[in-house]
Amino acid sequence: MKRLGILISGRGSNFEAIADSIDAGRIPNAEIAVVISNRPEARGVETARRRGLNTVVIPSKGLDRETYDRMVVEELRKNQVDLVCLAGFMRLLSAWFVEQYPLKILNIHPSLLPSFPGLDAQHQALEHGVKVSGCTVHFVDACLDSGPIILQAAVPVLNDDTVETLSARILKEEHRIYTEAINIVLSGKFRIEGRRVILT
Ligand code: GRF
Image 1 (tube, helix red, strand yellow):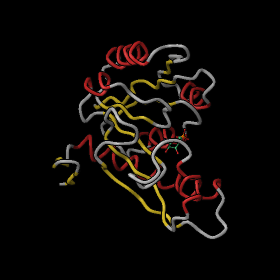
Image 2: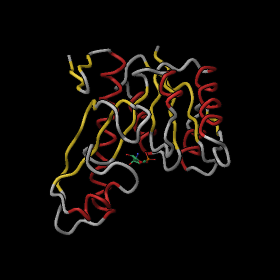
Image 3: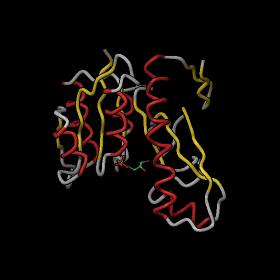
Image 4: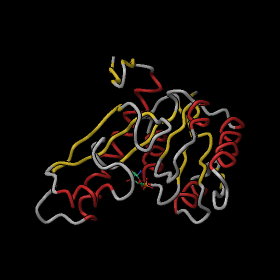
């Protein structure tokens, strides 16, 4: 059984999609060992508790990155986590954190990286006027929304799109490809050449 640690900061819909996938047997041989939120008020915290999952709030407010990351890693270790999934976790991880879990930390981002990293990616895409956007699941390194890309999905940007309608179209794809990416990583059916994740 592979043990997932899920890190959230907010709504937690990607976390829920992963939990649903596990419950439905779409991610075989995996379980959620712990859900960690850096924000006590995150809606995902409530959802995680309601689902009966081991839910831990570690508030990040006022702590420096190093101190915070050590607390989180301690909790992940305590729960013997094999794979860390960032799911709307709004903090950059320190190089030290990333080194503790080489190729064992995933993130989802609502754009086709390397376009539009950082905050408000859907707004950035609309402002730029791209005709296609989407989402990316990638391995995490110590830089923002960087790291080798595992999967991407594209969606059209329509004439009458708002941030809300575009975000909803992208989110549907996020929920689908995060499960797929977790399966790829857990099954080890990939190799890495430079920045390229070659699915095998
Ligand atoms: C998603 O769009 C994700 O790609 C980004 O933050 C958002 C989190 O949404 N990193 P949720 O908390 O998973 O609903």
